[in-house]
Length: 392
Image 1: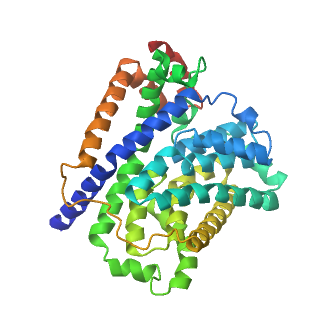
Image 2: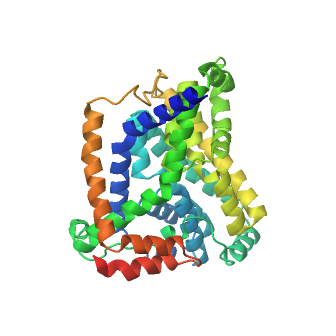
Image 3: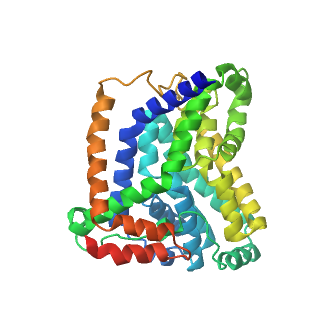
């Protein structure tokens, strides 16, 4: 038993080492974007569910944190401030499916085809969701959701969702390189890391355990690898269900997606699994707190259908274009750590991470983090950030 646990932990560690530099790069780019793109006035930019507004929602989502909990909390906050419900949900989807760090991690760990599939299927999923909302979302449902949302029940990462240290003055380069800009980048970098470490760590541990303990023939049978045509439909249908039960969301589900791909799930099944971080069990419980049980069930149904249909479309589109990888041997871990390009990149990006953490520590970051963690009312995290901006 101890040997089996040790094997799983070793696989998790080497997997972490393989993707470490990509994680740091992704979080750094995300922090830079958040530092130069303000959340102020987002609600005013999402007044309806027109194509233009949905496109704006997607752009704002792609420029925000990839933390699923923060995305859900911010979408609720925007809805309470007057944003259109459909547009707020589109923002939420984009926040977790169209962000740079996810694309980078997919490319490094699984290949560029999966990154292309994510950024092709993501907008398609949002379009399907919007159409389903137009068909089934009634004013009565929206009013009921708003009534529940106004109660202000707390979920996770409320403070992280509310914080806004973005710099508004000057060109984008001037914002990034200014004292305030560098401080904001360091704060967003650490905040994203703090908000996601459980999901990333959990994803790596689960992926390591599954890779070490679950025999490949089990996955092949479960994903119907012996029935190629049926598997194309089964994968997108079952992928979200696996995600719901795995509890892992945001970029933390990428290592597990690699294990599932090696195990035999279809290409579309991988895409559906990646899409489904917004319907994992903890997130569903937050929907219940935010909008009530009936509307959380409604969201689950709409989101699931949107994810499965978009993933199925990606399966057939990429199949027709011959873009689906033929090999199922994604190198998700090394047997041991070697002196190679991965190690060099890890050292370089670890130095960057250390520099950002040091600036965070020197500019009032720990105090702000404690205030956000102990926040008992919405918006406290934003106040904490505003009160600490002068430390730059």
